[in-house]
Length: 160
Image: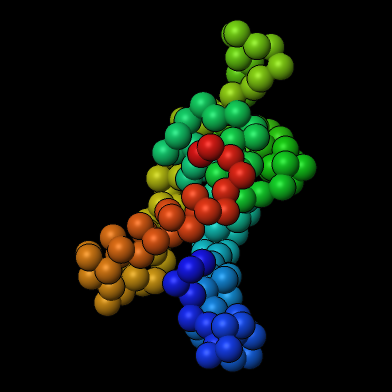
C-alpha cells in the first residue's frame, strides 16, 4: 500500500502506534462478530446455525452453485460446508443435482422450504443490517462498499 502512512524514518508503524481503532482488519472482525452474535439467537429460534443462514442467503441470491463456490461465498471451510449442506439437505432446505456435463460436479439449489425459511429470517438479517449502518448516508455506503470490493479483489483467491 503506497498511501499507507509511515513513520518519519520510513518504517511501517507498529500495531501499537496505529491503534486497534484505526486497524481495519480488527474493526472488520469486531463488526462481523457483533453482527453474527446479534443474529445468533434469532437464527437458533428457527433451528439455523450461522453457516446455514449464510448458505440460505447465498443460494437465495445465486442458486445453483457448486459446493466449492458456496464454501467460498460463505467463508466456511469445505469440511464444515459439506456437513452443513448434508444437514440442510436432510431438513429438506436444499437439493443437490449432478451437473449433466460433468458427473463429478454437484450443484446446490434451494427448495421451496429453504426459500420460505430464508424469507422468514431475512427481515431479522435486514434489521441487523439497517442498525449496523444507521447514520451512514447513501454516498458513504457506496464509498464503503467500493473500498470493500477493492480490498476483496486484493485478497481473494478465487475469480468470484
